[in-house]
Image 1 (tube, rainbow, N blue to C red):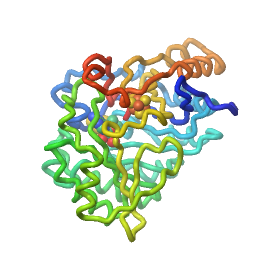
Image 2 (image 1 turned 180 degrees about the horizontal axis):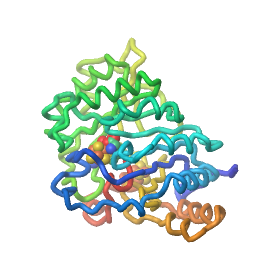
Image 3 (image 1 turned 45 degrees about the horizontal axis):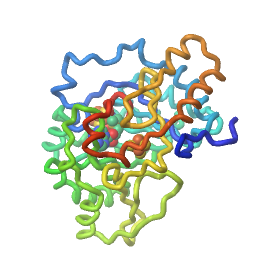
Length: 338
Ligand code: SAM
Ligand code: SF4
Ligand code: SF4
């Protein structure tokens, strides 16, 4: 086990790994996989291209040896991957791994919550952008109402999983849902995290004007609730958290656009086909899958990961400008994992 942190060029330690287990999804959220781009003819990764669970486990073990403490499974929609609990069980056996979490749209959670918990999953983040069935169906591009997601949230709570709710806010689309969502989550003891709409990928038609900033949301919430600031739990915590006064329920903000947090970004991302990305906005992936399949030893794989991380200089959100927006090679969120 490595005792020294693995640092990048800006002295940021490698601590988190997000693994996209699949690039497919049963939703077509407007801000992520717009239906007109991700249509019936869209070429998703063929099965043989995906990392197997054994390959994911091996890579995860090696990442933990060089400093990763937390792993989040994501996608695409991770619950579309068959027997995800089997992967969770494998990851749970890794010495030194402190936390395993999952981000999901929640539709299949009712079916899987119990087995995920039994396999060792600790926490889920469920994405829910509106409580209004019609609006939610419009946002998710599949006309799916809120019921399966809310049922999934309840099933996760009953199974004993920690549950947080992610809400992406886009101006003119679902900003009217900010207060109802806050009320719903507060009443149900759920931590809600408002996520600023980001310019990930190149298909979601992002414009700065569409972003509802943390400040705007905070101001609106303050008209309804008394909020007190909560200290970060750990270095690199992305959410800025507040507590509803007189309760034990927190509400968080992920101000990726208006108050970027690149200086403490400790996150690496592994795509479903085994490419390592060092930033959500850096489209240059580094192959680990073919290297591994060509019989690389553990030491050789570790050397490759360490050298990639040591060379990392990414700070896209800190540098965001008209020029970077226009000229960066971007990668889709559904491929790289949110
Ligand atoms: N399908 C799962 C889900 O939706 O929870 C996991 C993958 S999704 C890419 C992960 C997270 O990224 C979700 O919470 C989603 O809302 C968020 N996301 C996707 N596109 C985004 C964007 N353009 N800006 C901000 N957040 C986004
Ligand atoms: Fe699918 Fe999640 Fe993207 Fe929505 S945000 S399209 S649920 S991957
Ligand atoms: Fe991390 Fe890149 Fe996001 Fe900055 S822009 S916080 S470096 S993922």
